[in-house]
Image (tube, rainbow, N blue to C red; front, side):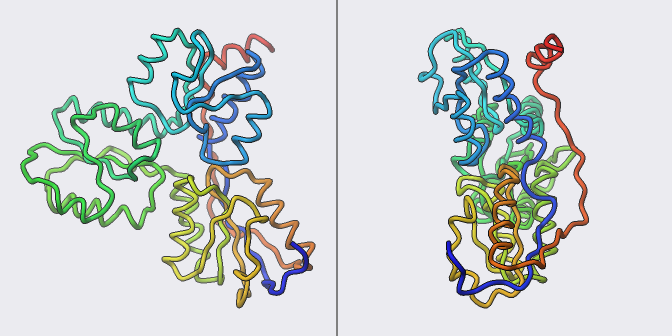
Length: 320
């Protein structure tokens, strides 16, 4: 882009933004596996839902596949951060694959809840988006005992014959959109059981809260993230719901200059799977356009860290 016809006077950078602990861990798993075992390393599905991350890992020697049928027997395969169904583990054993699980621990928590509720004889309602990798993996834990619900209308269509029920949720949902669905489930099934702790993850929650806080202070929110990233899409939706127009882009190069018409204050944030350097590129772009009033806007600090899988941790310790 050359000089823009419209420019904001001020830019606010939402914080927290970008990589969460689960994404950091998943990317580290791939990089460490390449370091210790050497390429090729196979990764089932996108390790995280971000175009730039996937392309970077491809250059390092990672090979991304949709299914294990594409992986040669006895190879090394990494499972994405979104989690997998038990049948995938079985398929890996049949092919004698060395599997390294990069599933986010907070997604694993939801899987364990599904197993626990199923063993209690409960019918489970999973609040989530059909076709998302995380939802597919979670439903695989107890396919005969889990029903996916994505809206209040879905809840209204449910049979009332279930006597023991429970609810779990996808970790990357909109807090605002999920609440009425859960309330509808509680109304329809008064004795429905909930997990001990909220399933929507801390990073999704924090990034949405930061955007909510910014929305009434800006005219537009530019969300950095890929179109298949659930948490990134939710940030854009939350922005719009709270009064600021919003666009989701993979990088500043996708921004339409016309979007900035009548925008005096612009906010920039990034989904939990978007690298920080994409935000830095955006900031640098606007600086070159002559904008100097750029500041961080934050009141949330994140200190969550997740350990890498034990097999990689042991290799790391052995190499020291």
